[in-house]
Length: 291
Length: 291
Image (tube, rainbow over the protein chains, first blue to last red):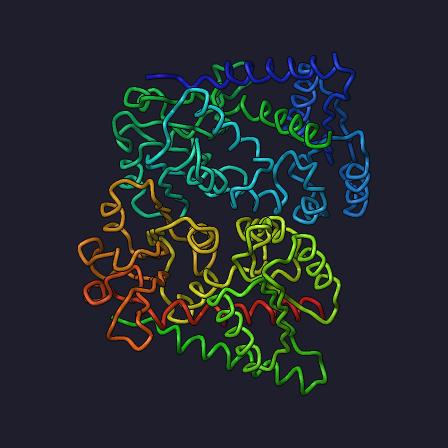
């Protein structure tokens, strides 16, 4: 059984990006510049954006955090987005979700210039992905592809079962795993809350990508021998023995499933760390496309 | 066994559209106007565009056929598209495919204003579809949804197997059948040329949508009792006894599969006639959105 070590791979990727940025600097070129817009004071959102900014520093990117108050109107946010669209110094930017209720999230994501949409959330970029065109792939799915790629996990002709149909993980993964090329060329089944006989489906899977958010949902008796497991779940489960009072738990019963798996991602340290690395990679791509 | 009669349903839809157009006329409103651009002299393309123009006449739409020579340059076509984008009288338009080799199809489809893209081929519209936003759904997938809808075929919790991952049928159908709502909420498996054990997969399907283009590919022994069959295949098979010298054949061995099926589309007269009806429906939607 091989652990797909997202912590290690994401570090490798960051080091590679840093080397490229150092080369850019050496040639006197502009370095990539990522902006992150955060509206309100949600603790988790501030933590996420903080990690993104620190990751930028580590690889030598410029970064800008745009903080807006919780009472920001939709128009004010749209004006800010237009400013970032027009600002030639900004290569890519993200709008941290969720947004306060007075703001229409769909309208906001549609306002981001697709060429700066390093989260890959604009429908034009999502459509390009589904139509096999080059584009920004959303960071978490992109990270999963990269993990499979770096470990040389064969996906062609394999039966991939995706659990959960969210816009940011399940649906894009179901599309990406069935595209031509590598990683891809899988037969893909997308399952969700209306799926019947989930065990019958997972027990036929060569690869399972679970993005459900239900701790320890996937049990050993639901998978076959040598299955490849990608666990995207990150749920905080209360735990008095932990200093934080909770532990981060995946969708997969790791202790038992890992005994049957050929490859498996741990939680934490699997898919999670890949996400920020791929956001950096998208920002680097955005810079290169603007040269 | 119920035949999903696309000929009848498409006629019903055209009649409904005609009634709406008559109302528009009665109120002195502008009627929908569809333009079709055809480059070159491909016989099949001319036939298709001719059918679309006649369908417009039947429902009372205005239509314009733009014919361009086989030697048209990419720039000339892009200029024509920009003209149609700007022309306020045109509600929607299509570029008949395939295009001659000197023209980059992707670039051309990207140039169509998404609000006039009644074929639903622009990545922005494709992405909106995949992200559950309202948009123009490509005509053939839209026609299949409409058939399932009008016959009240339950899709929720059913296992739908899609055969073929083309951009215009297989991939969008795999997305649409798994979306929230009706028709949708299916567990969806997308199969293609790299799929192993296709019979094992089709024999578990409640609904099979075949868009492979291989005559009589799907045999009775590959499906279970009461399966629902949507046959998107249209292949010309030489046949001396036919006045045209060929017959149109689907992917499904209709004679034998229909004995096991609960619902099935015939070929011809199933999915095929729905396509033009849904193009008209998209054009009507485009007009309504521009009012």
